[in-house]
Amino acid sequence: MKALVTGGGGFLGGAIVELLLAKGVSVRSLARGEYPRLKSLGVECLRGDVADREAAARACRGCDTVFHAAAKVGMWGRYEDFYAVNVTGTANLLEAAKSAGVSRFIFTSTPSVIFPGGDVEGWDERAPYPTHFDSYYAETKARAERLVLAANSPLLATAALRPHLVWGPGRDHMISTIAARGRAGRLRRIGGFNKLIDTTYIDNAAMAHWLAAEKLSPAAACAGKAYFISQGDPRPNWDIINMILRAAGTGPVTRSMPYAAAYAAASAMETFWRLARLKSEPPLTRFVLQQLTTAHWFNISAARRDLGYSPGVTIEQGMERLGKWFNKEPAKG
Picture 1: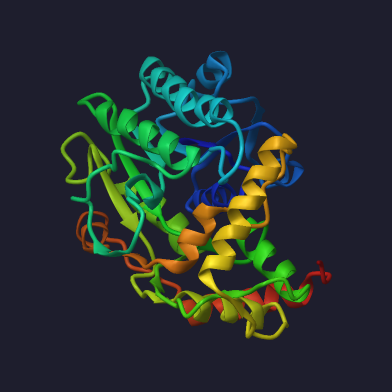
Picture 2 (picture 1 turned 45 degrees about the vertical axis):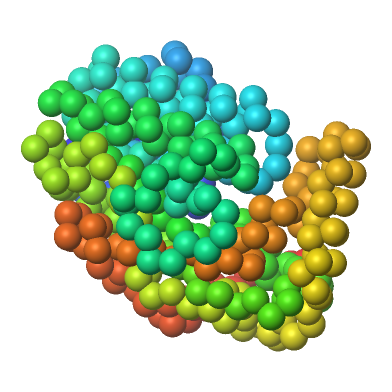
């Protein structure tokens, strides 16, 4: 296998790269930045943007498998920026993959593509795309996922994976944000909400991509389909956050604020950020508030059946590894 990993310098992309190398795969990475560590591991590093058709074409040449993990992630920003990376970038890669004779295309999607607002409990892949999206990220990732699944053909087999809330040691924005705000005493529970959520340990998410590549072919059960990926072990939201804080060496979140006050604060922050044209993400948005107060967990039976996926690292084992990593890192925040 000669594999291209887009976003190979990112959190999940980097984990996919390392797993591929461990499997003896020749790996090329396409990313916007420079990543000396990848080069030191023997990765062929190309610098470029997936929104650039020439960069996408150059990256796909000579590869038989594409892992498309690059994306613009976040709950804040201009629609044009999300569209350029997530939709145009994916279209460019699909076109380049077809021209280069790539046979397998694994797309890193997100469960956000089916979030309708409100609780999601035990849903499987039959859940439809909503008619309205609460974030540009979700909308553009849904558009990209549709492109990938529609591109499935006898010459290019495609599949999409939807790992939920990927976490673990390393350059993980979610973990870093929770730890920094916890240390600063800036986390608040919202009312009495503590609903079940799914998460995915980083090694399990990477393994799901490898399994998809192993199984994927025009005749495979997974061809042209999307799959939810998680621990298969939903836990109460604040229990997970407090486990992360414990791993980071800080205490649990005990203070709370009423939902109405949190919603008003989120709305005010969004308004101020827009009027001030700030590029940073507000500390709290209505989308994040929704995520903190609703259930979101999924049925991963299809991934178990078609991909042979089984989470190899439990939540407790992952938290133990996370704690060891934090102990080696300088305190931040």
